[in-house]
Amino acid sequence: LYITHRLDVETSGLVLIALNPSAQAEINRALAERRIKRDYLALVESPLETSKYVHYMEPGPKAPKQVSLQTKEGWFYCELEV
Image (cartoon, rainbow, N blue to C red; front, side):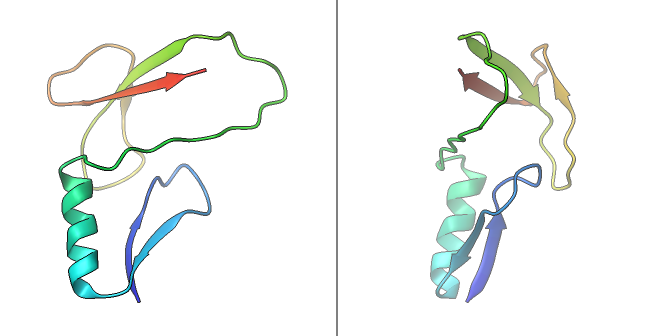
């Protein structure tokens, strides 16, 4: 087994594991090319206003990543629909 990627450090419990090196390489390519879409489900104690929430995240290999509510050149666009 080849541990490939923990999808997000801030979340818990999700790790991608490849069965062979070629599968690991393909998963890594898909992540680098942003071909993998991530959807999250959250349980909350109080309701949130139904809306789209947007922030931008600084690219980089280490966590935690910096985030901003303002667009920044080269930063990733992140959208949460509630």
